[in-house]
Image (cartoon, rainbow, N blue to C red; front, side, top):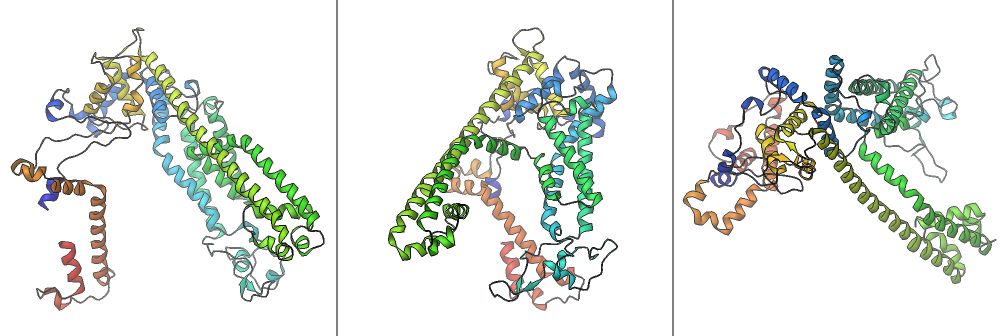
Length: 558
């Protein structure tokens, strides 16, 4: 236990993709002293007025608010619309209420986005647990007519599941003679009634509607900005159209297309899905050429097959017509029916193997690998293009932000301007992590590479990557082993022990042991926790380890 504490005495700085220098206590003393009330904005109710005063002072400098949002887009790596497509709460002094609502709703949009995506997944998952739409009203089927069912006023079974409850449980003899088989095989995942599905769907739609209203408030209640041409217009238009369709279907009972609409509404909130879908759509033109070559090969081989196997068992089964031959060979490309499909003709005449083997070599081994290589190359090109466009976008936005803060056209930005931008990033932009007083000065030191106290354009272009750093303080305190037993501390075995104790796997092992300890205790005291009769085993207090529970307790204690 002593060694464990000694090895855990240091705290390491973790970052993503950038090496960060940690500061010793002597170096930290050179930093400006931090005011405790400004280390974390809104840390207590008493500090709120001071933060608001600091925010108002920061916004008095022209361009600070707009520059902060440009920096946000540069860090995130995407921009749904240019500056003209957003409501600017900092340049509309005549409408303070709308400005305040826009700032607050902008924070809510970011903070509630994860919850709205979760609601979208719930909406999408309903399709797997609700009664299928195709079987809710199947009263025209003979199997339903033969049942004595209680029907509602509309003629549909009022058991909550419609006719699905009976159809999905129906069993009988199949066409090939197998008895007691399900007519409609399913996974018995119908957990919700139709009414329960409608209530959950309606609740999810209300949440999404409220979220869109908040986004509308973020745009200052200006329809022109909410439907600004570009990504904002098509996304918001599609979301509203899908919401109206889902609400209309939910209230009227016409829910046939709801599964597709739920998938669409979820996709509008998943940027990664939209990005990959766009990449796939851009791949289609190059894929058409390769797939057309495969299609020509399949059509010609189907034509040859109809002619070669005419009036033979192979022809009657697999090539009765050109369309059937194409279907047979397309399945063969997937190897789902190969080599079974060639066996009738191969058993009759071994020469027919030339037809099948040549087709598989050309279609499966050549064309399918060609499709794979083209798609992979196109995807790699898309990833490189995406990375380049993100870099260009970041450079463009940071350059615009620099221009806004360079009031005197001096090709530099003062320390005070950078600190004001960081204050607005802290208070108005939740996408960027909150920076303490010390962290602001450390990040400024990283930006100010020449130590001039001002930031030039080349230095300012690193602002986005600097904001991604994760900083933590390190202590100069030396452990007992390091101070009094330096030979042991420098030994290889002790350093290996330090690495093991400081590793993530050691923490996971400790967490696992604690969880297992809690589970063992819960199993041991289950009757007591459940409120049942509980008798204390006399062996627990005899001082000996003679029960299985005492063995577990001793092991976990050790």
